[in-house]
Length: 452
Image (cartoon, rainbow, N blue to C red; front, side, top):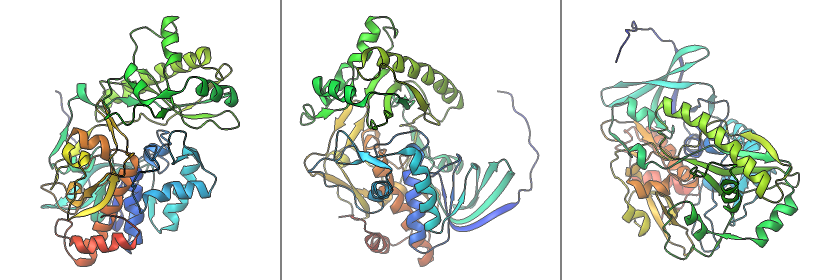
């Protein structure tokens, strides 16, 4: 591979803070808010023009679609996502659960206000390109923006990038599932002009169940999910293949719908699932965006022809970026396992709980019986580097545990734990690897978190 030499640069320091959070998805946003609530100066850096990650940038509106009447669910900051959205008219009753679907466009404004209310210093349109460290301890980052390069100095840093970008920059160990085994990437889309009444009548006449996911995807359940209603669409895509509107071998189309507004907007159409893409490879991202939009337009055509109510519908918009489920995970002080998430693991260093919900790698387990597991602080702590914590889907664990903790509500759990731990370590005058878990848990309890 050819290389070029870049001369050494003198980079201006554009900000200094106590806790710096990079990435503003449910994990990063929760980390920043909980850190600020713990009483330390906090800054939040985001590469796009809005906060919210998958909620606002990808268009995934179902933050808690797993929730059932018997679910023992998270407490703390995660439920505020739904509460704030509902209070401001930015949510709807999610069709397959007792949760709230969140209007991703309106949540951009809600997140803006939430960040400002918490006293967090925001920086949008800035990408972290390097990590600063002294020995084992991180001291800041370098960002690239339209203003050029700038350094942000911080006493504690939280990696909320979703891809463990900062951990990778630090040279700390990570793992990555082989690309051919990674969960699919998604292009989310929305349609306008849907006849809501006609479409819902079609759904009532031909209800789908979770067991029907197996028609396109090889899904294993534990049986209790099979007969439950799922907002899954299969027939329009099968008919489109039969009629030649979709190539017969293209099996990546088909999936779920969520909110249909009275005005006929069908948002959160999760109907393009493409395998073989690595979200940390810029060439794969380029290929995925282009191919995903091509396939999304085929999905719209299939709906127009074979989904009653969609006859006059058309594309409203795409998500701002690909939906990525599966890239790097850190090697942590503790690495979660399939056994942990499937068998109600308990940890002394718990920073929150999450229901027994697993969705990925061909496995679907819904939390219908009240079972839950502890999320341990050790899964947020990378090896070989200090004062750097991880929030969100890149916390430490194996494949099946990742299929659980990657979900947005669990990202909020790990985010709140990381934000509080960073703040408490500062107050104690110790590093994040040395912070007293009892003190962390006491602040989490004050913030309304359940960790037992």
